[in-house]
Image (spheres, rainbow, N blue to C red):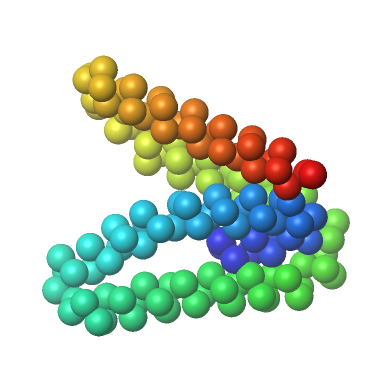
Length: 133
């Protein structure tokens, strides 16, 4: 899905494609580190866990290549695809992150989450300004 989202956004325009790519990269890095830890904890060797993460990454690239070539034929559906993709990312963020913030009653934890959230918005806004120029 990540590759398809990147391909669709590049077909809309390079600025949107760059921003989508960066957002997915920043999302994927901690996720892949977490997946690596889960695989190690499940009994995989370091090499096998790394290989499994690599296979996952290859499918994202294949999805991007496939989407880039096939989405041109379905350009009328691109806005809908992007809306569904954005909704999926918002759902994942809301279902993973928001429950954790409700569980914590420590002000420091709430402050860190709020600052991180606002920093993410600021980075995307700044990227939008830089890419437009």
